[in-house]
View 1: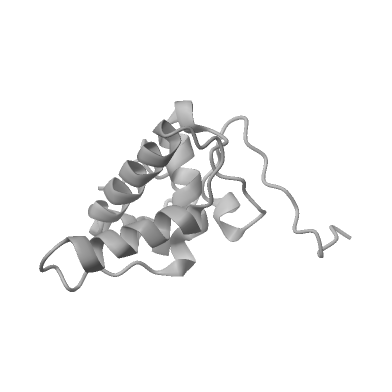
View 2 (view 1 turned 135 degrees about the vertical axis):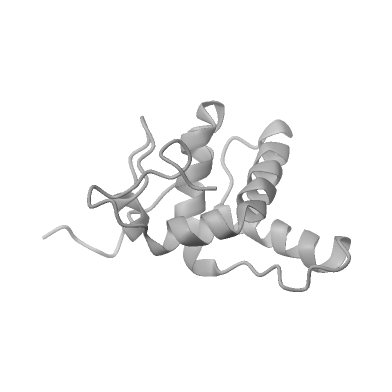
Amino acid sequence: MSDSTTTPRLPFGEQTAFEQYNSENPHVLIALERFTREAFGMGHAHIGIDFVHSRARWYTSIETKGDDDFKLSNKWRPFYARLIMQRNPDMRGVFRLRRAAADREITVPGVTPEPWPHVTDE
């Protein structure tokens, strides 16, 4: 479930779409954290959230039975990358981040998203 320790709220106090999705689907965060920790534990200093996300899709589609409604939307990947690092200080920096809308909702101490190479700040 979403609370101030798992997913920071916007100052307005309104639940964001990501907070709602995350609170309704806690199994997604559990799976993504598990697979991130496995990759990190195997010595991968940096991995892509898409790598972990694809692993979670494989696991839920191939390795598990039932729960056909388990769907992972690509639009939440930037949010989960930040949330995983925020909740797991030992894994801060495991995902390389690009600036995204998720930055307005989830900040990770000590991690600064990079600008997209083809986009200027002007």
